[in-house]
Image 1 (tube, one colour):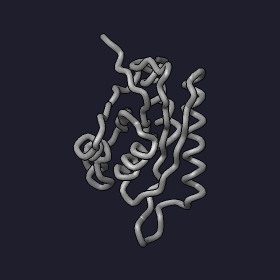
Image 2 (spheres, rainbow, N blue to C red; image 1 turned 120 degrees about the vertical axis):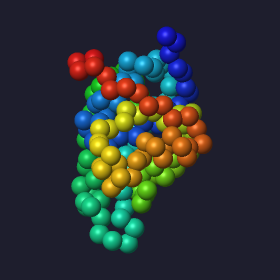
Image 3 (tube, one colour; image 1 turned 180 degrees about the horizontal axis):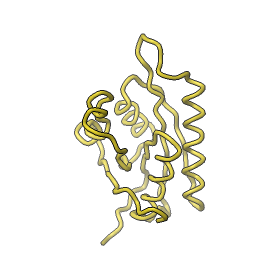
Length: 144
């Protein structure tokens, strides 16, 4: 199987566990040498109503996620971006444009139909409404 190559990828993450899982999947499926890798975290804003969590709290979660990604991707220079948006998929697409990513790469998070209905299906929105390729990676083997 050939390894896809991109000059720049955007990797959206939602937590340190998500970042670790995604970083392991990146290592399994990509040769990252020469690739600009940017991990992004979207702080979801409520749009006129109180936010689910404080901004400082969400930024701390983002920093933990970025540290987890760096720990998994030793030897790879990892850029990071925090953005603020009322729609997570729009926030991801905005960062992808800002960093001129060739592709958005992620491991879908688990969640049932009810969870996707209540929170919106970010993966579906990315796959259907993005102006660049979206790569969905399988969850890596435990210990992989």
